Length: 238
Image (cartoon, rainbow, N blue to C red; front, side, top):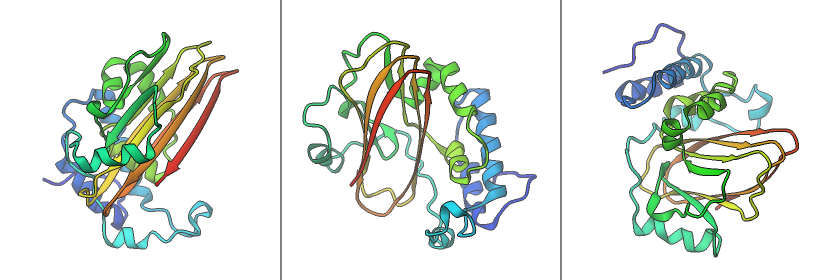
């Protein structure tokens, strides 16, 4: 079936509206359903950024317009040898805390989230929506609706990560987030993540992105830092 719309639609947005109409978000709470719909409508209205925008003046997005890379529909992370191999090369040698996302979905068998200090919660976004709904909702709905790719991400994200550090807590060892693409994606990956650092807290976040094959990543991380908090964030793209 097709998505039913009653708002202006840019031509390059139409394939994504069709894909949205075929995807199922039956497990989403009502507030998240409304959030996705609002952002889909905004993306349809804005379309892809053009070189007339200062932020995109050096990047030609026309190939992506001409050949849409639609979101993948896989429900769970498929952990194969192709997913395990890069961990030895890009991951920390002895990670204290590691969360791995394979093709945009949480892979618990590759992750290491035990022995977290009191006052620290790290987990996949899909679990946080169910277990920490107020925190996630406040973080998502604070995002303005004037960034087209962020709105596209909001409509389609299936997972991501959440790091919540309570006020006054110092996380001495880094939290490692590894994003892996296994080469058989053939579409787009959308992860939505949230970092909340309470007043006077301290944390180190290391994100690595690696993969092979033909795919498009559209990842969004929202950072919420209270007064006096410190967050060191390193991003590595292989």
